[in-house]
Length: 136
DNA sequence: GCCAACGTTGGC
DNA sequence: GCCAACGTTGGC
Image (cartoon, rainbow, N blue to C red):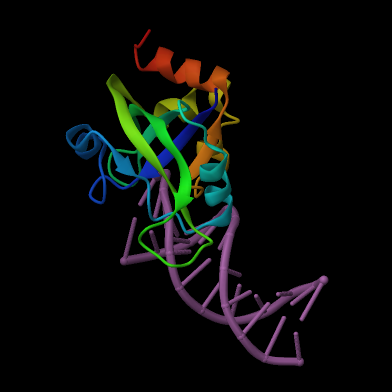
């Protein structure tokens, strides 16, 4: 299983909205690196849900429930979406500040490739995030 | 609101 | 195919 981090500006699509809807397709990715990551996702992979701009924190965990297919919001076959569903909201959201302060996370794409909207996360990094969030 | 980082576009 | 110009993202 693989781990990923997806970013969203909360006023566009927040984790709470995903909790309400139970499922969504992750659309709007218009960057090839991010697209390639979307296409590499497998059913069951876990996603850290990060709120950019407002909050700047990882607020929840989601999972891939449907692998990449043509983005229904465009005819351009360059772009794909995946289906995602919420797993749980974190008790303690993990802020960017905390992530930057933790040496174990200084290689995270979130820190090094700040602009990439869909990024791979290592299992070790995922575990550290869970620890910081106070999750088991 | 500014600006650094970085991806994309287009002229040559 | 290079690279300058430009646009966008996102932290501050």
